[in-house]
Image (cartoon, rainbow, N blue to C red; front, side, top):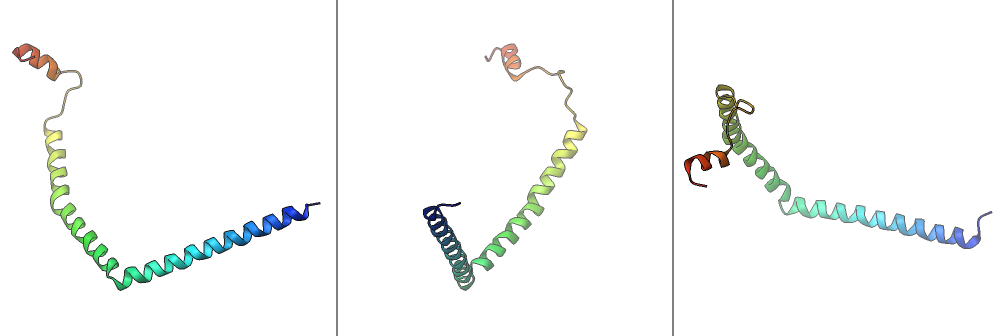
Length: 93
């Protein structure tokens, strides 16, 4: 059998939890309306579009060039010498 104090405590906890959740939902709803009224959604969509165009016009072509160069000039594993060793041989280190 559950103690009456425990039932009351549990009831208060559940009521507080439901109230807090409802408050979060209503605040989120108000925030969404505020963002829509102030053009936040439109500005975010424009920013996403601009960044996407930048990515497709600049980043992808650079990546393609880098991939082609890496394929044309592959690195041989263990075949080269380190930068430190090169500097030592030159007398710069």
